[in-house]
Amino acid sequence: MRILVTPTFARAVKKLHQQQKAALDEAVRAIANQPEIGETKVGDLAGVQVYKFRIGNLLYLLAYRVLDETSLKLLMVGPHENFYRDLKLTQH
Image (cartoon, rainbow, N blue to C red; front, side):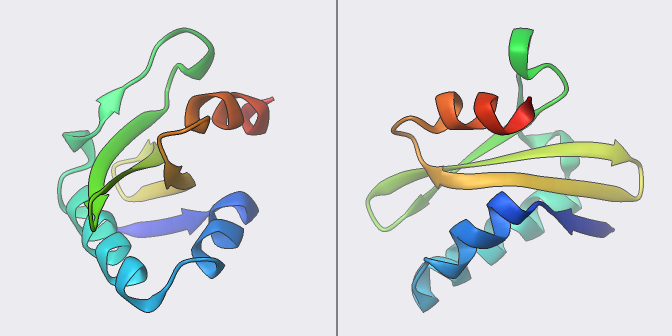
């Protein structure tokens, strides 16, 4: 599975601590193994899927898009607060 990342995703990953990056790696592996695992969005975010996972006691969301059967594009990762608002801003 080929995984592409957006600059927004890369910036968010830089801010994470080592243990948080390990949890993110697990989430990315889960998505790569089973791309339909995320919740498909509609409306403004049509075509985007969001996978929810925990880092410690915080709920994090990972937005991604399945480009074809061999590639994924990771759009954004972060805590739930303002996540969808920021995601909509990056999609336009």
